[in-house]
Length: 250
Image (tube, rainbow, N blue to C red):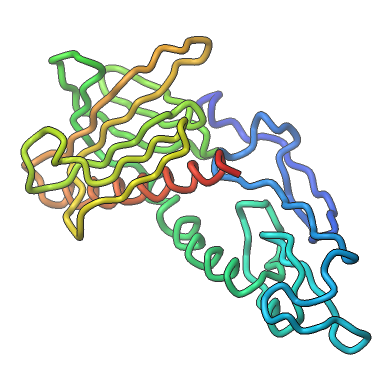
C-alpha cells in the first residue's frame, strides 16, 4: 500500500448534531467533506422556517443537521445518512437537505467505488505529443488521483483547479467541452444533453507552486467494454468535481 493510502487515525466525537467519526487531523480529511453548519439560535426562530408554524410546548423545534435551520417535526422528520459530515448514523434533515443527501448517497454507494477501482485511459501530460496508456484511480483515502503506466503521477484532489469532461460526437475544440467545472474561481457550468463522456482535461497545481499543469485523458476506441468502463469512470469524476466545488464554496 502506498504511503499516500496508509490508513489514517480517526476519532469518535459527540456534537450537538450526533456522533461523528472524524479524521484526527484536518489535513487528512476527505476533500469532499463538509463542515457542520452553525445552528440558528433558538431565540431567533420562533416559527418553523419552512411552514411558519409557531413553536410552543406541543410543537417543538428541530435543527436540520445539514443546513442548521429550525423546523417543526413535520418539516424536519427524515433521518438520512450524511457521510460528508462524517456522521455515524442517519441524522435529522429538512426535506430539501434530505433530498440532496439522498442523491449524494449514489456517489458514496456507487460512484466512489468506480473511481477507486479505476479505468484505463490514454494520458497526455501538458503540451507533450507523447501519449501513454495508464490506469487512473482515486486513492482509498479519497485525497489523490493515481495514474499508473510506464510513468506514475499523483495528483492531489484538493489541488485540482479545473475539470473539463469531453463528450462523443464533436471535433476537438470548444464544442467538445460538455461540462466545465472551475474549482478555484467557484464557477460551475453544465452544457449539452445525454452525450457520452469520452475524455477529460484536468488542470492542477503542484504543491509549493502556483503554476497550473494540464493533463488530458482519452478513452480507448478499440475495446468497447473498456470504453464503457472509462465513460462510467468519467461520469463519476464529474460528480466528484461537483462535490469538490461545493466543499470549497462552503
